[in-house]
Length: 433
Image 1: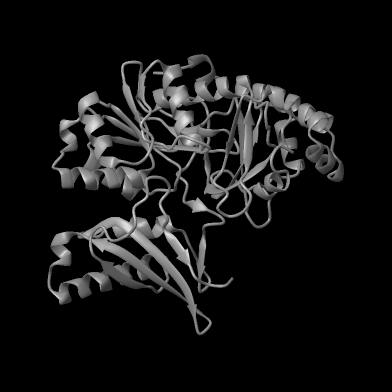
Image 2: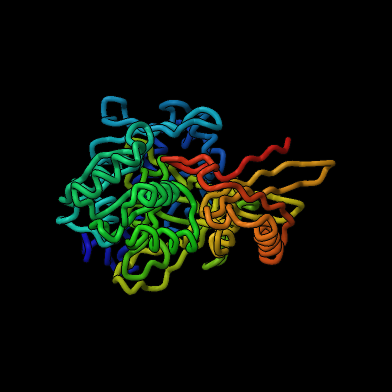
């Protein structure tokens, strides 16, 4: 099943020809209308007309989140404000928020790509989509909402929070598709169990989860507890919002990135050079159809790789592998690089451990320390001290054996780690780096 079969199944030569045509057009636009790009292109000694092939893209300078903050709020917009019909922004928790603007056509494209994404995940017109992504300046809620409406499905704009009410609505309204963060999905499962609700009694068939990195082990956990197919979706507000890429339900192996609108590259985060095909690195995206705020070679900081081999679903668009984290979220502990998702995979594989954890990193006498706070199920927590001690030692050993880092496991009682209805907080880094 496809939403737009013509474009979703374009042969690779036709797709690349379309990409080049659209790339050349967007470069001319940003050079003419965005002083930042005109200045950076001139400083790099390149003009839009010099880009004759897709390979020439890597001659262009990168755009970073800091560039967006420096241009706050509207400095990177490529159209007059009277053409902007919607403004979104990041939370700004680490500085000025990044502001993005959408023209009417941008909203139309976003809606189509989200509709494509829903169909890729196995949703259709007859579905009732329970949209528990947050509405507001965050792009998740409205992005999924407009896509569901474009698809022709029924959408419940419930947003985040009030989980008991969410569960009641799912039961009473017959929700068949769930959209939210993976950590909130597990929180829903926890609340449902406390309320005596069995997800096998609900109509849910598919969950579309994104906005934070999650592991294959967490997918297994979600599918078992919520009795649905868990599909990974990717997006970021700077590029568009949700729907930049998504897994297909047929393969669940890599997320199709809609290459008729975005050109992906993978670079070494340190050198900025492209890596060999199939190698992991930082995802860089160029938007080739956006009008409001086109971005050229935007460094996402997300770590992934690209799969170009054909997919069993018939879509020809390349796939990016599951995000292992962000290059700026990567922890370096005594010289070892580790992502929270790697620790998560280990924890979920250990019986008696709940999928709720917190990593506390500190520096004591010039040495890095890592404490892994993890909840255990009620049966284990009420067991003898020596059983808890054995479980803690096993966690420490598995993390040491598989990741090469020494940690201290702190077993905590069920429901004691703070829950989030949006992105989960997984790391507290107390070091002064």
